[in-house]
Image (cartoon, rainbow, N blue to C red; front, side, top):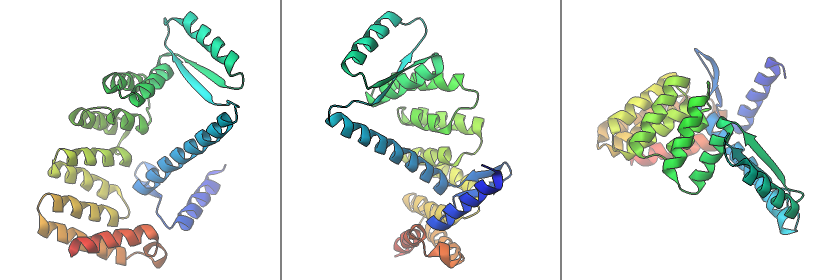
Length: 257
């Protein structure tokens, strides 16, 4: 798809959803926090639909699931081959994919270990996989943070921010970790960085007010909520009447009561 067509489709999507999903920065176009969250939810929704379809087929005795197996070199490959042959004989319609090589195998094993709640070993494999990727995806840093203790997770997110730049999804996750540590000044400092790079400020001003309120700084919190309301009132009607902005305005006004 040509770049002008892609930009037109992106703007059409923003108009339909009544949200700002993209913004121009010094590095070029990037997603806003709302855009990144929407993309994440789309991926989850599509994955759940695929799983649902596969489960419906399985309920009727037709197994068409895709199974990915990580195979680290020098492992017991003869055992893996025997297991795959036995499984394929029982479920001939299933698709078994063997991922050879350290990176894919480590990543697959890390996700399996995370689901098994083996957090220490999952974090180890995520770290090893990240070290092998020249440009890792931000999602990998988030996945690793989910299985790490708070302080370790925060250091890991900062590593990602240092390597990839001020990725909003990583910064938001770091703010939530700072709040869990009750480090309100640290959370506010990170929020200020997001606000500075964002074209629209209203959502971050509401978040700032909520953090200040948690910190017991009520006067500053009220000022932040009022600033958010001013920013919302300045929006074009099409944006201001969206459900997301309406909900944001309600949060700000409720906090001021």
